[in-house]
Length: 402
Image (cartoon, rainbow, N blue to C red):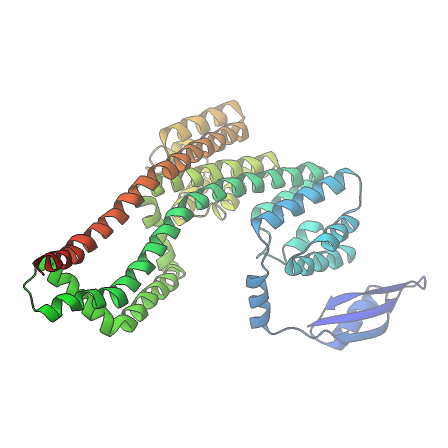
């Protein structure tokens, strides 16, 4: 339970804050153990867990919010503004209510003696393990500002790359969805009315025209059932990929999709290289850095590969020796990592890997955007042609006979 307290120090100063304890009596004892004399203490009313979760989802912290947060924090710390004052300034100007709550909680914990990294651990839904561990290393080494700048740059790089991929896929997804909706409405409500002309005249038609007529009749009668089946399939798919087995299968399937799979491979390799490089620059051991970077790579296949590489390093091997036998890791990556291991500049080699595959993914995304437009036009043209030759041509033939 969380208790709000007001207490007096031995010097007579008034201190306010929050404390976590099993009961009010335990909270009082904790305050007394810290040389504080309780004046006022009451239990904080907590929101139901479901409301907290809904608020987190609705007002969740985006990658862009995090990027601005760390960028501003680095600037303020560089200007020698204390951490608490820096966090208060960022919280005051933030428009994200959920982020404000998170920052205010971190401020209270830091004021109570926690380090910044320890306070951030209470919010794993906002801060990744990479960010927390890097800040912990920066606090120990005294290079907190530089570490936070590294984090901001890394978030920005990942954000830009992910945005490009999403942007390239958004256009075809929108066109296909719009075409599917229009096709559904056409077949369910417009096509049956058009084909009624052919039915009324009781003329013989080609098999493909008859097939379209039967499809229109079925959709007119059972469009609601088809709609339920479509939404059930989508819901079932979303539910399945959120299970452990479904997520594993989806991660494997993503990499097998033509063109898209290759782009995603490049994105994961770039993410792996940049995250591991920044962890090594922050002074973390190789094994720990590999374990942390595996948790944020974004794909179960590559997560497993990175964890096995960590096991190899743990027993005295090298990353490059393990990667040599892995199909998902290109030979160029293995060779660059091997050079880094031999020269003692592994972080630089990994940064080069990240930059190379970021550029490759960027080029493929640009080419995909150029290629996908004519492909979509051809697909839509085929759909229109089927409708014209199957339905409109027979109707024109009937009109000409009249």
